[in-house]
Length: 270
Image (cartoon, rainbow, N blue to C red; front, top):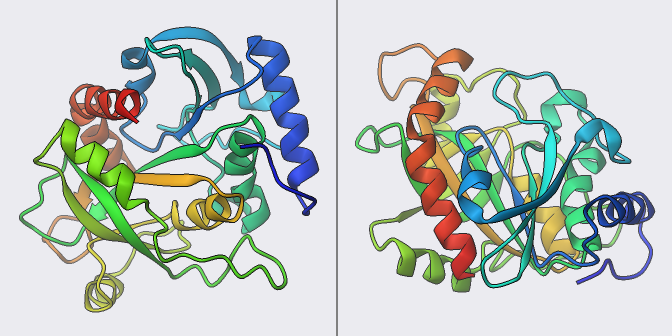
């Protein structure tokens, strides 16, 4: 689908989509994918690469210099002929506290003609029995950032924010996949043990610093959303281990080949 109507930020997304179409020679992408920590190898497993661009060359995007974030956009042609637009990272809310900047990636995906977006992330797990390296389908989210990319009376239905249809497809690919509720904090500091306990009491299973705002923006423009988290660490206080970005990256890299192949299989099945 192409962006409907006028809205602050839509013009910039259309500009970005035009640049991508010109560079890749692809007038329409069918699926958009946003890769979080631990998911970078998905591109290699998807199909034939049409081309790639740096974030710095795309209107509205810029690199964040965070270790583990791949700052490029890749166009991939699937074996069935569909084209997939893969963002190697996203704009994180913690970078500049700008929800409109966060929304730009999914708005650009919609502007390329896609109807579906796959959002991934690396996250903390609240169940000590869920080991680092485990992928979990997001069934719902709790937004604790205190903000939204929507402005004014934009009353978007979030009942089926993470499409049940797409979760069925994912489970057909891998029946062992489990589901959980993702809780987005604003970051960039990791959550405290008390905050992790609060998230669990609210019904959360996963904690992180992305995805919920992306999903709100995606639903606003009519994209169907599949969310997949990779548990890279236990949430603070779940175990006695301290948290570090280096450990998160290491856990993601260890699981990357396996989960990336899984994600590629799911994308090809959508």
